[in-house]
Structures are given as structure tokens and as C-alpha cells.
Amino acid sequence: MTLLISLAKVGRMPPPRASDVASVDLLACDRCGLCLPLCPPEAIHLALDELVIDRHACTGCRKCIAPCPVGALAMVPA
Amino acid sequence: MPDIDVLVVGAGPAGSVAAWEAKRTAPELDVVLLERDRVVGLPVRCAEGVGDAGLREFVDPEDAPWVARRITRIIFVAPDDTEVSVAEGRTVAWILDRTRFDACLATGAAAAGVEVRVATEAAGMERGPDGRWRVRVRGPGVDGGGEETLCARVVIGADGVEAMVGRWAGLDTRVPARDMESCAQYVVQNVQFDPDAVYLQFGDRIAPGGYAWLFPKGVGIANVGLGIVALRADGRNAREYLDAWIARRYPGSATVGSTVGGVIVNPTIKQTYGDGVLIAGDAAHMVNPLSGAGIVTAMKAGRLAGRVAAAAIREGDTGARRLSAYHQAWMELLGEDHRTYYRIKQALEGLDDRFYNALARTVNGIPEGKRSLRKVFAHALVKHPQLIPVAARYFI
Image (cartoon, rainbow over all chains, first blue to last red; front, side, top):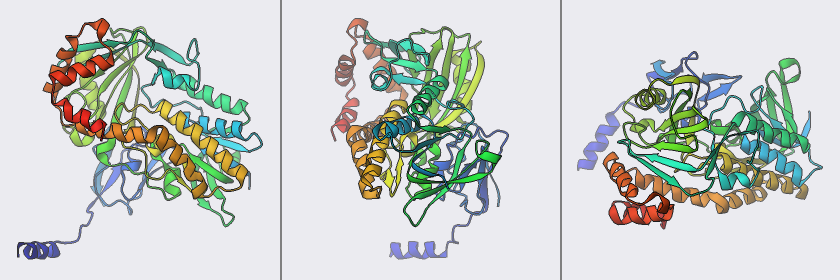
């Protein structure tokens, strides 16, 4: 019974939707590449020595934010 | 389209050794080594410490121009600043000058016949109908500054934590956040320390999930840095933790350089090979998960990768099944050990600062001359039963 109730609750929850996406401050970024393998949808890459985040691929999971050694990543409205 | 037998992406220790070894194994092959930066060995994203025995498998460090310092002592510093010196009466490690060291390896590869191309980055790759990889490269090193496509029978991805080659080949090189050490380091002058020792300090407020280090590069000059796991941190980033540590422990020091980077303390990726592709070094998470050491492990992996790639091309079969010999050889050599170290690391995470402070005092109770690692371990187990589960996991 409890299970049914919780399932019903889950069913009513809105689908996860990213309202914010990760963004990089290129002046602070050291191009170390640490955030690349942390990104589940692989939305971050380095191209010609510049960090690029694919805003459309970013799911807003925030996994890259805190590990940045210099705090160059932040969430911004999508 | 230039036709290449072995294309190595990244001229760090893994890549240079891989290219060198492929050429040495099969001198008739065309081997190309790509480096994104304009100079091999720059920028340095490394604490530059390396164990003596592993290094000697590849090069002789005595009087080498790429050595900064010989290390004969390890000084463990407990969270409360209690110091425990462990000396084994011999050279235990070396602090390298990575700029010169990496250049030396790449030069060795070039002298053996490898074509080294700097300022050239790989931008993507697809497999052609002939089974060969088409690798798009670009950068100032490409003629005309534009783009070029190289065709390669085997691509060796030695491209560090970014691991783009693995990603392009469809391999999973992602890292869970709990296994990423966020590191910051300064080159620091005007500090007092024993120039023959490396210092390692542990502590939840100093470097949660990692440790802080001082590695001497000379008398009065050192690499001072730390690594943290952000999930265990208090909201500060690695550089902020480092600033706090230096202000407390080395006040009055002068910073003459700085770097940051990630150290992956996660065991080897499940699959390090694919059709015509091998992944080596940091890119394949080939780092000792307990220490974060990765230079010698990268060179050992590079040697295996170069050998397997060259042999496979000679036999005319560069398919995934043939190249899986690399993965198997690596797992036997070090990969399985790293899995064990990873389990020990997980067990150690349950111990707090109070434990480490008490352990330091226990070990200091052993006379310094008799302080072999074996004795320290045995003594610690008797006095600190909390360690028994940790020791037990070593055998699981």
C-alpha cells in the first residue's frame, strides 16, 4: 500500500528539467581538463585551448561545479 | 591523406613511451606523436615526485639533467602537525623537472624515428570503411594553421584526464565525483624544510579526501600543493584550501608559480581498447588510487600499448580482440593491484583526524633507526585495532 502511494507521488512529480546550465568563466579557467570526465552527458570539451560547454547537452546536474580547483564554473539560467 | 601506422595523441610520459616502444618493436612502421601544446612538457600539471625503483626501469636518474632533487626520507605529518619521519637508508624517490623530463622522453622517441608534431591537437576521429581511423587535427602546428586529416591503423590515446580519444572511440572514460582529486599547487620560495624529504600531511580540515604535500625542487624552493575530494569539502575549492594551508604552515613564503589539475583515483577503466584504439595513462585512470602517483604507471602502460600496437600491425590484425592483449597485460602488471589499493582507500575514508594523530604518536614510539614500513605496520595494527578492517580489505 505504501509502495503504491509512493509510486503515485513519483508519478505526479514533474519530469526533471534543467532550469540552469553550467557556464565557465574563461578568465579564471586554467584549462586543466578536470571537469571533462566528470560530465555525465560529456557536454564539456577543450578546443584550441578553450573550455567549451554545450549548453544544449548540459543537464544541469552540477557535478562539475564544486570540483573545479579555481571555482571557474557556475550555474546560469539556461 | 597521410597514412600512418601508429598515431599517439599526447606527448606526456605515456604517449612518448608508447610511440618510442612501437617504433623500437617494429622500426618499419610510421609512428607519429601529437602534442597539443607548443612545447612538450609545458605547462606542468604535476607534483613531479616519482618512486626510485619504477623510474629506473626506464631511465637512469643519477646526474640526469631532468632531476631536481634526490629524496631519502618521507615525513608524514598528522592533522595536529606531529611529524613522523620514515627513512629506509636509501634513495626512495626523485623530484623531477617535468618540463625537461617529458622533453627528454619525446626526444628519445624522435631519435628512434618517431615523428613528433607539436602545436597540433586532435579534434575528432571516425573509423573509415577500411577499418582505419580518420583523425582530424588542427592548431598552429598544422600547415597553413588549418585542419588536416590523418589516417591511422592504430590510435593510442594518451591524452590525460580529458580522455577525448577514448570518448571518440566509444569507451567510457568518465569519473565519479568521489574519485576525482581536485588539486592546486604553487612553486614556493623562502620556506624552511628538509630538502632531502617529501612531506605529506593528512587531515579533514587540511585536505579532505586527499593530502597536502611539499616536494623539494631545491634548497628553499618546493612544489607545495594539495588534493581534495570536492564532495567532502566545506565549500571551498582546492586553491582556497591551499592558500589556507600555506598561510598556516609556511607563512612568509613567496609564490613563484601555480598550477591546478585533476588526479583520477578510480581504478582502470573497464575497457582500455577497441577496434584500432588503445588508451594509456591518466586517460585510462591508470593512477595509484592511494598515492595519486601516475608517472611511472603511465610509462609502463605506454610501453605495453606501443608493443601490442606494433605487434598487431605486423600481424595484420588491429581488431579489438587482438588489442585486448594490452588490457590483459596491464591488469596483470598493475591494474589488479590498483583495484586492491582502491578498496584500501575506501576503507581508510572511515578513519578520522583523531585516529591519525594517535597513529603518529604510536609510530614515533618506535626508534627511528628501526622504523621500517613493515615494523610500522605491525606496530600500528597492535595499537590501533581500527586498522584491522583496513588490513583485511587488502586480502579481499
